[in-house]
Length: 635
Image (cartoon, rainbow, N blue to C red; front, side):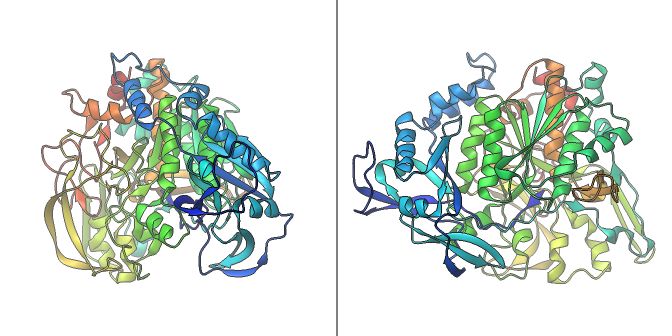
């Protein structure tokens, strides 16, 4: 999972006010205005003067989806056998007509912008209006002053004053991105820790997995035996970092995987991005493409910003050629809320993406997102455990995997053994379990890493828990284990949940939860039993090239996309949105999913664990797949 630290430019319509100095606008019915709460505009930023009037600026105006309840019902029908709409997916044009912003609202927005000589284009889905103009034009259109600013060492442009729009326009807008271009995203894959080989203590187990290992572990081979290879399918990868295309071809060649030539297309969205985080993009392409060797791969590379991320999804979904799309970047819901309170994010952040994922589901696109790599304490990676920030150690889940319209990919650990003569420590996992590093505690303690500053190492695990943003979706209701949990309490937080101390002994507790339950499905993600990835230097294919072992739910999301392409090519049809189907299969006697429902520290993600007799838990979701059996169910 590639988390980021977030300061970016969404904004949300927040309140009503009277504002009389608004230019004449065609079709305007009122002089009332709505304020736009500016995000990505930190209040404590240093100001270095006004942005020159002729500076070119690009702004995205995200419109509200129409008939949302009707759209939700339609999506459900596309996944329900015997429904008249079963697997009858919408085109982008049909989606726009039925669920995009109404044409009158779009017209009012574009005419308003045109009155300031700001050019605009409307995305094919009717949800995003991209406006381009000068700083002076946007100053006048939104009643702000764009300024040069600096915050946390980064130069950016932001606004003085709160943007406003006429009410008959603003009331149809979900949020606005780009009046500030501040961002401070960081990304990192989880490389196998060198501590495993400290003092010559070398572990045993599947330490550097290949595609063949995954195929054997999750019963994929029968699909290849039928001749399936992903032919006719396209895998979409949404990412925020560039990569060396040649590395992927070299990886497939070295592993004896005969792939379709010239299969990779790269689209730079909004100008693309640099190579910071290129390990993530590289592994996404290599892993998904290895499982479906005859599928095409389209990589959408956006800048490290809200606008870049949103526009990358929008571009991929509106192109409507990829039958499956994966993403391995995200941040905790706790961080989104925290940054919104600082006016560095908008409360509508998650909903802006959720609208696009609903569009994807209606078009039959299977979406997959990494659920996170800090177990049940997702925010702890972003903030650290010495930040003093309230909520840093609270139970939390990851966005955008929290959307009910994307399949959240969780993580497991495969059988693993470590014997240390140096410390007289033996660690053994005899079977696949939820990924949580409490099984490593004895060794980590022996290494002297049990200081609070090192607790982040202890908290690694597959993301999971309960969303505080989205309600429990209907497809999860009634599945045994949903909205209840068994937990392994191993930490005690301070009063404002900004730090924690280790308990002397783990305690099993039980409770109930509400909200979207995460993850949905899991596969191997622990870097201790991780996968080989081939890299060369950024922008220099072949230079200092070699293999490294990584892990994280970053792997599971693109692997599921590759398996989706393989399943679709086997069945000759597109399965569409997986989640309602997965939960329906899970309650059947011949379920293709294997729950990991043992309770305790042998099967937890740092807090959540299994419960005997259930089908679902917040550590591994519905469990691991038998891919061949799943393919039969998805016919």
